[in-house]
Length: 357
Image 1 (cartoon, rainbow, N blue to C red):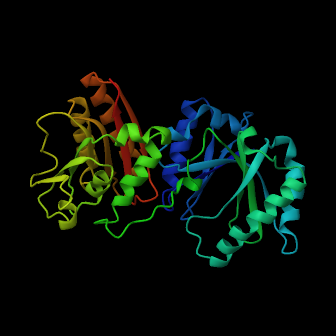
Image 2: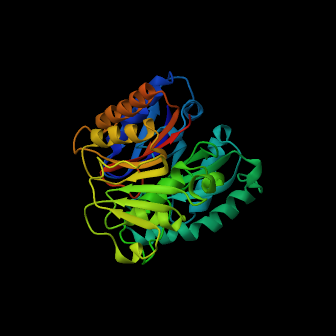
Image 3: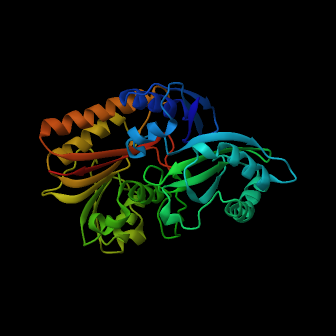
C-alpha cells in the first residue's frame, strides 16, 4: 500500500486528512487517512494500483490549506543504538528500486517534539548520515542534478520513516515552518504572520515586484500595528484603520496615517496596492470584505485572516472559499487565491488574493 506522510499544525490532523481525501478524489485517486492526533502528522494511504508519487503529480501543495508539507513514504526502519547509519543504508538498499536519485538528506522531527536530546541528536546525525549514504552510493554529489530529496522522519531514537520529497512540489521551508525572528521594534508578534504569508504566497524571485517601489497600503484593524510595521519596513505608505491606539514609535516613522474608523466599513477614496486585515470576526464576513475590496478595485493584493470556529473548521473554509470565488467571478475580475494554515497561525487560516484582470 502506497503512503504519503503529510504535516500540519498539531490538532488539525482531521482537517488535513479530509482535505487530502477530497483533493485526491477530485483528481481521480481514492485514498484514506489515519491522523496521529495531536502530533501534526497524517498518514494518507492509496490502496489502489497508482503509486504515491502519482498523487503528487496530480496535486500541488500550493492548492492545499491545512497540509503544510508532505513526502512519499518508502518504508519504516528500526534504528539500533549501535549503528543507526548502517541501519538506514541497509534499509534503503532493500527499497532502492522505488527510490529516486537524491543528493541531500533532510532529518525531520515532530513539530511538538519536547525531547531536546532527540533534537540535538538529529542535528549532529546529519553529517555522518550524509557521509555514509554518499559512501554507499545512495546520495549523488550534485543536488542540481536531482529532482528529489531524501527525507528521514525521526519520531524517536529507535524508529525512522524513510521517504522522499519532490523539489517542485514541497514546502519552501521544511515542514512548512520558516524560522523567523521578531525584532524588538515590532509592536506585536502578529507581525510574524504577515512576514510568513509573504514568504509562502509570493514567488521569491518576484517579492520586490509585489512589495517594493513605495506602494500604498491599508491595514484594517491595525492597532497596535504589527502588520502596519511590516508594511512600513517595505517602504509603503500605510493607512492604519482602527479605533484603538497605534504604537507611538511606528507613528513617528512618518509613513503611517491613523484613521479612527471601523475596518469593515472604511474604504479608500481611490484604489491602492495592498489591503491587509487581521480582524478577529466571523470568517464569512471577512471573506465578503475581501471580495468587495478586490472586486471593486480598491486593492490589487490582499492578505487577510479567517478565524475558524472550534467545530467544522474544514467546512467553514469551504464555505468561505466559495464566497470568495463566486463573489469575484460575479464581479468579473481575474484573480489568484491561495490560503494556508501558517505556522504562526493558531485557530485561523491566512489567505492571499491577487487581482489579475
